[in-house]
Length: 431
Image (cartoon, rainbow, N blue to C red; front, side):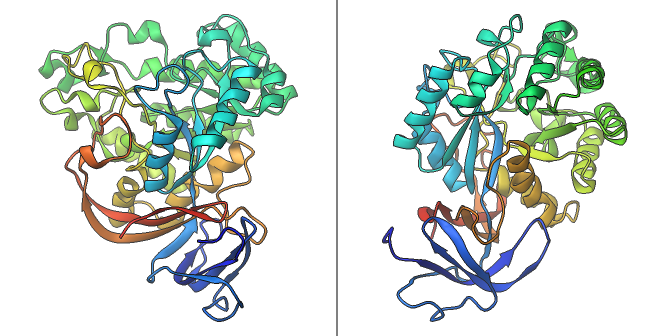
């Protein structure tokens, strides 16, 4: 495909998640942006355009994943920018926000600049950076938020490490407000987690495993909302997992506070019973909850109370997962399966397809201040073609990520991304 010739995507069903409008048509792409789209954009309507037949598949904005761990720099054996981008492209994710808890931690403008430069050289999708909220992600001393934003960071977070010091969190929210930076926080009280490894309840007792109470999440979330009231800072709860947290988020939104919330695709489509006989790929942080909590999360996404769906992509190598459930590292890969797993909810009639796509594209892009996740004239041509009914079986060995710790291994899914376009360039095709 020539980078200079316009590209015309034809024979497509266009779906705009923001408006919910759906219908046949095409998309004209030139100079890396969307020049035109609609029912009257058809083959032959633009001279000298390169034609790409989408075979009647859906064409929608590419996904934006706000929470993915990429090992580079320092832990390339887990994931590189290149391998993560290939997995993302295969899953329809055109923009990935990388987490800061690498080695070294992304808490310095020079490291932000290095990651962005490295991504431009090696990645086939857009890589953005969430810089560390505190130095070293240790929760003790606030990072230089203004300088990190100037270097290109789109948010501040300590990844999967909560900031337990309320004074540090208060100051961070105050400074982040000055620079209009969202603070993304992992809501978990480590003291209440203790030695827990899965959801506290009857099933954990049966397995003989120490549990993690829901209060570990809700207490930290309640504290953070109080601090938002004090500071007015933009706050995003990275991932919530239980019904009680929904009540906290609902009250905050009703009070008009600048609060948003996310949930991982794992907590929407799996529950604690899927752990079965100590399946370590399903040890996650936060832990999988019971079916009632899962259904509550699904309903909250459908009604818009939960704003964002993330992959929580967290590659772990064989050595850290081939241990007992209590001793293995938490985390699962998810970039390549996030959309297909989400389509299970659409098939079940629990979430509409436009709402699912909005929570995976336009809303996370808006939260991070990115020009992405939308279908509009002049918008970046980050698009995917999706066959929502194509069946496939997840083969961990065939996934693009360096690590293979998928909770969906051998799962039967429907929905496959047949093409991914980033800035007008096709970076992935599936036939």
